[in-house]
Amino acid sequence: MAYQATLQEMETALQRIQGSPADNGRLEMISARPSVGQRKLVEVGELDAEGGLVGDNWLDRGSSSTADGSANPEAQITIINTRLIETLAGDKTRWPLAGDQLFVDIDLSHDNLPPGARLSIGSAVVELTVAPHTGCAKFASRFGHDALRFVSGPEAMRQRRRGANAKVVRAGKIQVGDIVRKVDA
Image (cartoon, rainbow, N blue to C red; front, side, top):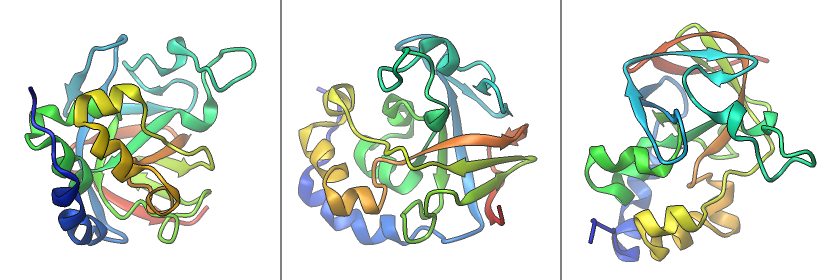
């Protein structure tokens, strides 16, 4: 069985997770999902206003949250905090199992980044959306039911422990190591 953090380990790590920088964070990983169940780590990526992360299947995959099953423009890019996923996954090689595309060390909470807040990453800009990023059965199977409980619930959702949904508002290149900054809308 793969590593699964205990609820006590997650609670102990909470202060460290919440200690992520409010601004001037860092892009630690880019993970494209070329097809269901596949992950492709890239050092350099491109964010496109129409298609999201180039090489990712977001647009083709569609969404059960839209009336016509098309891709949800409010969930074009998924972003997760690196301190959180490090706690849940243990080894960095397991981070991509979360299914997110961008792994950042920045405070993703609603207090720091309310819906509509924008982040500059490389030459691209993304805007956090209202759409909540929630855990699912796949997330629980990969990281455990305690992990799903840890990222769920009103307080966890306010802190965006599971991460955030975003959309690309300015296309551009991104690279692992880029500074992630808050920008005015």
